[in-house]
Every structure is written in structure tokens, then in C-alpha cells.
Length: 448
Image (cartoon, rainbow, N blue to C red; front, top):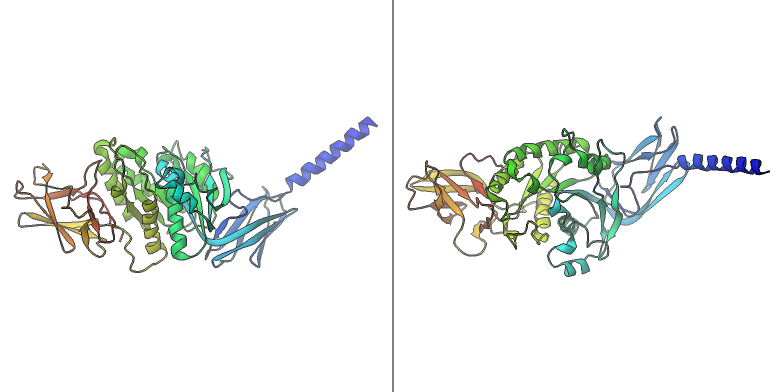
């Protein structure tokens, strides 16, 4: 009797195990309350038993597939228009999974190091920001900080998809939140925000197939594909401070790799030019030049933040509201086609010597150039062939800035904000600051 009971229990255990193994499953990125990308084919994938038939139904559309020999399946649904009304996605195999309250809108990933990870609760006016964060059509997802030696099967999450509320937003990325909030207000569609960032991380482990690294890309980015998304925002560079133009080369490799990961050569990639900090030393302007050079990469944009530093001894400026908004301006203009929108501050374009003075021309002058604080233009310098820079008088002349110094009769070069503690005051009339630059050997781009 005892032996028969043991045998029966064994059979039941095997049956239960068999049933469990047959359960159709999906990656962690697919869950209730998520946002799926509008106006793009919707790819859904997962795992089941080998040869198991799987169907996915959403918004009156259904697609079916059969799992391969390794139990992997993938279906593609047609494009959907934006929809702020929660719908149910039903996935059927040997079992049924229902994902509820799914919205259709815009999906963006935010990545980088600590200034991207920096939370709403640690940023400007946290109490007011958190109290106002009731946004039912903004959904947030937080990827866990892990690494992997090869591309992982699935992401690990700190928090699954959540509706944006005062309870869910405090520990979420402030830059990504304010970026998404601006998009939601301007576009009036749901927005899904995926935070996949890691404080202190250099660019290398985020890069595809970087020798000896790539661990963060493998664990925190690669498993998200082939999900449909609109683009990427990026805030990183502090940990690569000393590399100068080498950082531009690494950024090119990063962007190329991520675009390959998500199967889109035109995937938007908008980044922040890192803020001044007292402990960077003389290396910072060279990194700024490398970041500006990355504007030559198609479908990129750069938010300048030299004016947002409240404490030059703090590597984490508190004002993340304007950082997110400035990234959103690039997206609204370049990705969403908003016309007549000034989306960048002045970026150096060219120079010419004119009777002992240098005339500087800029892209993105908007409604005109101005001093943002009403004082004389500051932190312009000029030099002659000897390369000895002195402070210059700078005045606005139409769309140009004219710089001169009595001690330099034959100027050959100029520079602006060329210091790790730069706080220059040149901007356009829309209030967006000019990026630091030097004229001699300049390798930057303009993002036009």
C-alpha cells in the first residue's frame, strides 16, 4: 500500500512537472500596464514546449506561431495607432496568459551612468514633483543592475511595468521621467519609459561585443530586443573623462551596436553633454569636444547643461527637469517632426578674422543670440599664433559674436567656456545655452 502510494505520488509529480514545463512564457518586459510602440509592427516572443502552438491576440488582431525545437516562438502583429484605453493582450498555448491594461504609444529607453539613474526624489523640488506625478498614461519600467558574459535570455527587473503615480515615481530616473512627461504633454499619447542605467559605469560595458566587457549590454539591453521602441536617451561620460576624442570613437561604436541590436539604422540616440565639475580638471573640454563630434552621427542630438549646475563641487546637478526637457526638444523636432521648434542652443560653426577681431558663427541661433543673465558675454578667449589665450571682449553682432583683445593684434583662434568649471552666459533667445568650443582643430558637429 505504501509502495503504491509512493508510485502514485511520483506519477502526479511527473504530470505536474510536465504541465509546468508546457506553460507558455514571455520575457519580463511583457506585463500588465505596459506600453507598446505605436505605428510599428508589434513583435511578441517567448518560450513554450517544442512544437507547441501559441497565439497572441491584441486589439482584435491575432497572430499564431509554433515553438521551435528549443521552445522559442515569435509572432508579429500589425501596426497599431496610439490608444490610451487599457486593453488586454491574451497569449494562449497549453495555458493562457492575460496581460491587462496595455496601452499603445511611445516607448523610450534611458541609459548611462549616475546622472541618468539619479532619482526624482533626489532632484529639484522633489516633494512638489512627486505630488504632481499622477499620470495614468505614463508607464515606467526599471531594469535591474546586472551583467552577463553573453547576451542574456531575459532581463531582470527592479520593478515591473507600473503606472506613474506619486508612489511609483520617487526612485525612478528623473531625467527619463521629465523627458517622458514633456513628450506625453506635447504628443498627447501614452509614453512607456524603460530605465536601464548604472551609476559609475563607463561606456565600454554598454557596448556590443567590446573585448573583455559588454556585460551591461548583454544583461540590460540585449534581452530587450526585438521589442519595438522609438529611441534612446543617454547620459554618460563622467567615467571616461580622460579619453578626449577617443570617447567619440567609442560613442560611434556604442550607437552602431545598439542600432544593430534593435534592427534599426535610424534609431534616434539623444545624449547629454556632461555638466561642469570642479574635480574634472583640464580633461573636460576635450570630452565636450568628443561629445559634440558625435553629433555627426546621423539621428543624434545633444543637450547642453553648462547653465544647470547649482554646486560646482557636486557631480550630480539637481536640476534634472531642464535636462529631460532639452532632450525632449531634440526628440520633438527630429523624431516627431515638430516644425519651427528651437531644439538646441548655439553650436559653433565657423570663424573668420576681420581687422584684428574674430567673427564667430553659430548654428541654432533661434530667435537671436543673447546674454542669458543680461551681463557682458563671458568666458571668451583669443590667441595668436603663439597659442597664449587671454580674456576677450565679446559682443553680439546679429547672428555672430565678435571677439577681440587689445593685447592680441593678430588673433588666429578663439575658444569659449574652455574650462571644467565653465558657466558661460551666451545663449539663444529661447534660453538654450551655447556649448563650449575652440576654433583651432575643432572636430565638433552641429546636429543640423
